[in-house]
Image (cartoon, rainbow, N blue to C red; front, side):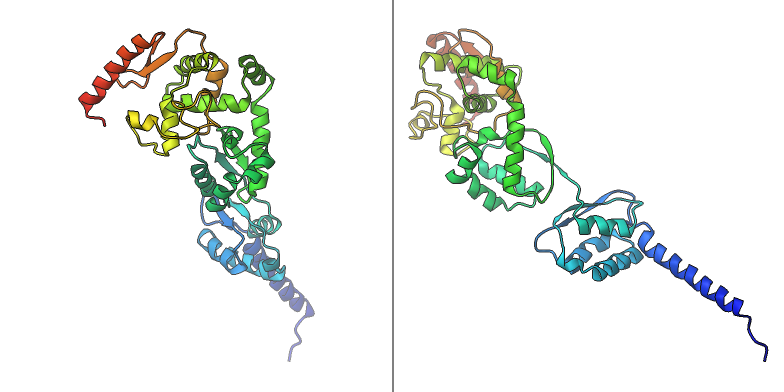
Length: 341
């Protein structure tokens, strides 16, 4: 029997090694994602290794998913799960995806702070974008001790929030989020805005309170400085603001289209028909346009305003009560003609 040359054994072993390396490379280094677009997996505090694999499977190629699970078992990943929002981009290996998820290298989300009318609505908006429980957030935003830690109370806490879009991590805690938003608030209230507020004799919280009322009066940013001038005239003279949006806020009924006399009698510190001066705090998260409208209010002598009868969203302004009554009569007539109750 002819003896096989040992070189052939070496060659066969080398070939097997190459095939093994190729297979390993294919499993671990080939593209993980089955999509041409970046996908995202969200890992929360209740996830396990199995549930994470279940979330990843629809996004991954079969062989790459096998590699991910092998790496997870080999590194005891189940004992080191990190919450977060992780990107699954195309042209990225299973090994890289696993390392990012295991090491907590997550992608931030773009969080937009909305001009919410209530803190409950804000809590809902935050929970839809972040790993936060809306009920817990709502409770804390109504808690005096929690608000005091931020430098506010439950009435003034809306002043902390500046409507804008920020990049934050999906799993950020509420405490860390509030700290970040406080920094953004302080950056927004720069020396220029602070100087303008001081010139008006108002604090940033008071500016936000006036701005929140103006925002509810009109969506027309061009008119907001005019309305600001009117309300500031009233404050200076000690006149009640008599702002309809504060009555709606007091009644917690934002669907009201027409304010009746009996509504003006509702007992609430937010009812500016019954109380002189500003309400305890903003009636919504004020817009940047509203805040800047107050800081750059138009100087005029108007003391009254009434929505225009053409329903344009703008107002007729008046210096005297008699002139205001004529404007109000025109608007009431237009309401009646449209059957608005």
